[in-house]
Structures are given as C-alpha cells and as structure tokens.
Length: 301
Image (cartoon, rainbow, N blue to C red; front, side):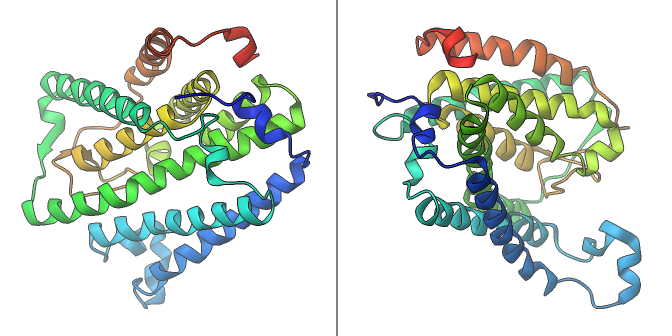
C-alpha cells in the first residue's frame, strides 16, 4: 500500500484548527455516547431500593442483554465521530485511520491473528499452572448469543477507541504540542486512566493502571511507526474479543457467558509486567522488521 506524502499526524494538522475544536468534537462524541446509553434505562428495575446497591442494579438483567447494552453506546459514538469529522473538520473517516491511500485490512488481519495466538497461548499456560482458579462456564445456547453479539459489537467498540485515542485525539494534541512524543504520552495516560472506574481496578488495585497505560503506549507507538491504526485496531479487537469469549469473572467490566470463569482470588499478577515490559516491546521489534519501519527518532520524537 502506498503512503501519502504527508504523515499520519502532520496530514491532519494541516487544517490549522486549534485544540478547542478537538475538545468540542470529543464533547459531541460523548453526547452521542450518552444518547446510546438511554436504552439501558428501559431495562432497569423500577424499585428505588435497588439503586442503593450501586452496580447491583444490573444483576436482574441477563448477561448477554447487559453486554449488548453496554456496547451499544459505541455505535452511537461512532456516528458522533463521523459527524464531527464531516461537520467540524470537513474530513473523511479515513483521515484518522491511515496515511495510506486505502485502509490496509491485511495489517488488521495480521495483528488480530498474532494477538489472538499470543493471548490464547498465555491463557492456556495460565490455566495449566493454576487449574483450580478456573471452572468451565460453557453454555451452548447462551454462548452462541454472546458470540454473535461479540463479533458484531466488539469490533465497533474497539476500533472506535483506536479512532478516538490513536487517531482523532493524537492528531489533535499534535496540533497543540507541535511534536509526536507528547500526543503519544497524553493519549496513553488518558486512555489508561479512563479505566480507573473499572471493577477490576477496584478489586485488584491501582497497580493495574500500569497495564492500561502501557497498552495505550503500545498501541500509540505502533500507530506512529506504522502511520495508521490498522495494526493497533487488530490488536485491540482481538484482545477484547478473546477476553469476552474465553474467560470472565464476577468482578470484571464485562461479565459474560464465556467458556471459562475465573474463581480464584484476584491479585496483582506479574503478567501485567510481562505484557508491558517484555511482550509489547518484542512485538514492536518484530513489527518494525516485518514492515521495515524507518527513523524511530523522527517517528516518535
């Protein structure tokens, strides 16, 4: 695939719009997301005393229905992002996807398969080491519905996050900072800390933010070096899809009818450090050789 003359960040900054336009655009996307949350309220119980239990107000909902309702705002946010690009920036959607003339779906597919193999292999090794921490949770009819919801909705949710953080916001912050390293760090930190209210953070501790911020850095570096979000989107979709279908727990953001259920005591695992400091750098090194990424200093700094 041919790359345009302008790079992924510089191309978007040619608009000469200030950061406030990007903040306004982000607010509009948020409003669309809130609109997408309204269907959930039609399924919540009417008893007022239920609300005193916090997140337990969702306990009366079927897990598949709740999973669908939690992912639904992403569809509205996607429409909101498209509206912002068209009406505020007068840009096409592809401008926050890649600097190539066309979207490289082969990159997405490669990253999806690579990360699926890695994550399933690590999980298989984990379940062999600690078999008592997991129980079989498979229910054919419920899993089939989960599978259909996941393969339709999770790509929308995961790609949307990449378009917002590694596309729209990274390009917006590049207009403000006039460099690459600060947009990379800023979007990665925001991405990580947006997960601070996730149930797993409350259960395991704030140390888990190392994983989320580190994952944001990984996706961001891949995006900057490859001049597009195809690879990071493939990784992100794979990560969320495998997680929703393979294993769940009572204290995760998405509790699903997955194949396995974690029943052990939650703790801060060294796996977090393994991903951030070993696996991610090795993948970046591998991708740099495969795609012949040039000039790390220019691309990142």
